[in-house]
Image 1 (spheres, one colour):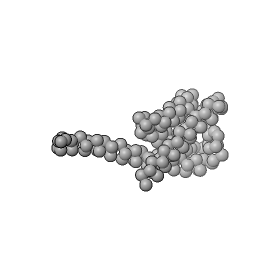
Image 2: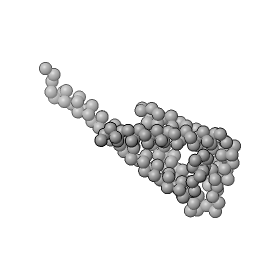
Image 3: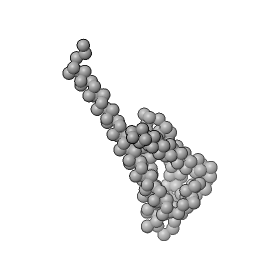
Image 4: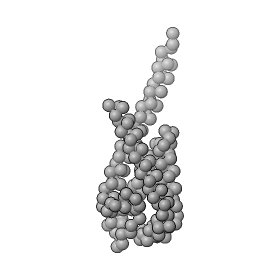
Length: 158
């Protein structure tokens, strides 16, 4: 059972990596258009250039962090933060904006805004689950190491 959970987590993390690399590359492929679309957003227009660059760089850095065990947990937290920000942005656009811009590229461009909101919500929930299991794995290995060292103090080797 543990093996299935481990393989499932790894598969989902690979999906996250592919998602962010794909999103960043599709934005870079038509970066000028992406900047224009961000500038058309009623919520982001004042910071369009900064947000366009920060989004692409952030997606690539986070995807890279998810590739390595040592940076994976921080990468998962950053991934969750960025996906949550995207989710909140979509919610605000859908419910409070008089104008709904189009700034998604690639496969996600085929989704409507509501579907995109649901997709992001499910991805965020999946990320929370993985973070919880990652934290559990980290703390159990920490406890195991501490327990072994405690037992070596109590039970001397013969």
